[in-house]
Image (cartoon, protein in one colour):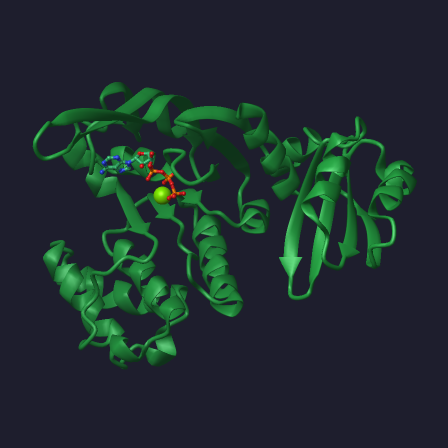
Amino acid sequence: MNSIEVEHLKRIYTTTMGVVKRTIKEVVAVDDLSFSISNGELFGLLGPNGAGKTTTIKMLTTLLIPTAGSARIRGFDIVKDARKVRSTIGFIFGGERGLYWRLSAADNLRYFASLYFVDPEVSRKRIPYLLELVGLQDRAQEKVEGYSRGMKQRLHIARTLLHDPDILFLDEPTIGLDPVGARELRQVIHNLHDDGKTILLTTHYMFEADELCERIAVINKGNLVALDSPQGLKEHVRDMNVLEIEVFGIQQDRIDSIRALPQTDSVSVVDRDQRQLLQIHSVFGSEILPKILAILGTLPTGKVALREPTLEDAYVQLVKEEV
Ligand SMILES: Nc1ncnc2c1ncn2[C@@H]1O[C@H](COP(=O)(O)OP(=O)(O)OP(=O)(O)O)[C@@H](O)[C@H]1O
Ligand SMILES: [Mg+2]
């Protein structure tokens, strides 16, 4: 059974520009998107900034009407049956506001439970359960203003679970969290998945998608680029290796020369304090090392390593192919 079915979904934003001479600008945020998510699946939606992820989620959560195409959530149409859709879903957007900072976590949940008409008998049992699920049981009586960002984000998740939705949309839930806070939040997502929730997640952290998601859709410019398991996506770059060389003060012309080698697929440079990490994607692996060292010449180098491609490497390749 599919929980979410998306068929040829499209969304165009129209904005007016200029004061004297008004022009209408159209942005195709989601072009032609089709995919389905099965019951209980943890599904990732990845793509560069502006790819259309949030727009897709806004349509699926009935906050935005599609320009064309359709989608069903548990068989309910997102436009015609919007009310029924809303009762089966929960959602959070990264960096969201909407909690009462002067109230405790428990009081926030009590307030929102009454706002959503959750039966008081039910919420009396459900609120402690949710606080425990998101790991806030010990701090539940403290005011939210003293909470860390990660704790607030976990409280947001508890809030969206008050009406016991089956399907959750989490748009960049770990954005802006420190590594420990992000890890705690990932644990919450794991728990929700174990609980049988269907989850659609977006993130810019590839290791996070790799760790959590069963399947991943990569989108770019409003269209699907790939849809597979994290392992399947990595297969895409299976024959590729990543050669990493630590360099000190590399100049652009040398980078260009390495890029120009017929054996290199792509080259990126990551800045690290006084050093840079040169990452060379190539099917030739260490075979091309002598050629590269010749280009680097007298430039001081540090560690050299050859590693297996990660999901991030596969993603970069997929998105690059589209461009
Ligand atoms: N309200 C709006 N009015 C006009 N254009 C918009 C609006 N919201 C988004 N867009 C445009 O639609 C496109 C898709 O935006 P969207 O926010 O869906 O991308 P995203 O994949 O969520 O990106 P990010 O990773 O940065 O969150 C972008 O080009 C964006 O500028
Ligand atoms: Mg977004």
